[in-house]
Image (cartoon, rainbow, N blue to C red; front, side, top):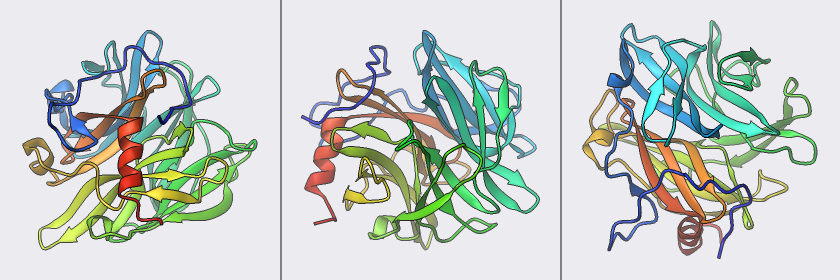
Length: 316
């Protein structure tokens, strides 16, 4: 059996797999869990991230306002499903990720500058007060995702270089830093291979440490005559040299299918941004943006996901 390397999380949000369901990732039956109605003046709330915090959960949420300004706010939840969001804007930008490293909570997000998008970084201890750090990349990048621990004394960050528009291409790279200020030693991780991801790929939730390597969920995009379609894939990266892809599923694990994923401000989007894990049971709860409109929840286990990757491995 595969194992998650980490802490137990007995109160992880969870719903058992439907009987007879053949795929490794299944949706929460009460999706979406967060909509525009969760916050006054929101046009949409999506592509958001959560972590265990205190006796419950805390999160950072992308909110597109009714002005269509893109902002980040925080939220708290007792069960990881029912959320109370703050109307206080902490940063401008979008697509946040959050992870705990050595007892502190690090936020990465797409920071908006006059010269293009960068990967912004900030740190908090209480989700009330934030210290903004130096941008990790400059001038244009998206999908900045920190690893949850240092590797050989260095912080690691997955990132996708891009252009200033709605990038019609993209590969995943990795960079590292000793101090969260100076970043370098860039390494190519992976690019699009199969049709479902042929336009571009980007890192999703914080990588999950397992006894087989880092489990990385990511999004892949295909361009059809109807535009972009975003789906979720998975790969296993080397534990000490995570730019090396050991195994990678040749097909998506979750793609737009339900109405809240196929209809919205941007149709046909499943965009994973966060994963909660319970090392005791191997359970994984995945938070994803649906159609650039709402936040939805899905479930899997480390066993089911790694089994699927191995059975559909494109790396032989």
